[in-house]
Length: 245
Picture 1 (tube, rainbow, N blue to C red):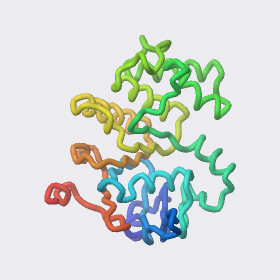
Picture 2: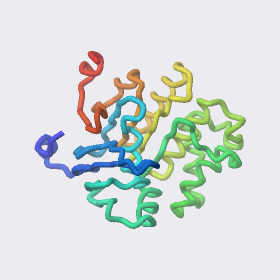
Picture 3: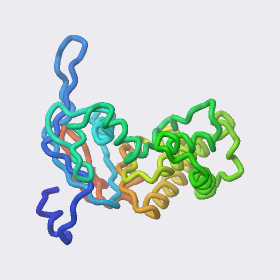
Picture 4: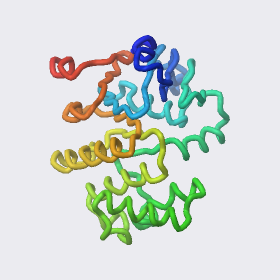
């Protein structure tokens, strides 16, 4: 993933740039544990990337860094030409609220809020909870096939239905980037395939950029590019490369 490859693509400005990003954690015994080492990556607007890797390889760390939840030990992360590593914690929070949508393995819906109210939450955080926002929430419920569950609470929904709501919530405030961390990891195989297809269709329809971290190879068919995290490095693979592994 060299910059020259990007520059050949009509000279566009990439949406996400990772520059020599390293991340390590200090463990309880004060030993430094390295996760990522001098990672460089360029991601363009509208791309869907699958990030493969074993448990503990650093997939979730990459998503946390891109969202600004965590900071790299070294290096820079530019999103739409903003180096989020130079922002204050409050600035990163506001940037994340506006520009990032999350889909998690365990859904992370607020249990005391209805499906409709869960969708309204990102709009409230972005001062968009007006009549137009309410109409948008109802439309998103329709897009994920759950118009009839607007007043249902998460514990009244199946796992697949909860993940549909989580997808709608991730997209409702029109973020430029969707980060999906093992979105099918808590679902059975058939339900997972339905959820992946829905997520893929909605993200492409709305022209969003998505990075999906997973250990499941069944999703590689929807990727524009496939990255694997191994030994603290990111390596780009083709679908045939993945099949050989």
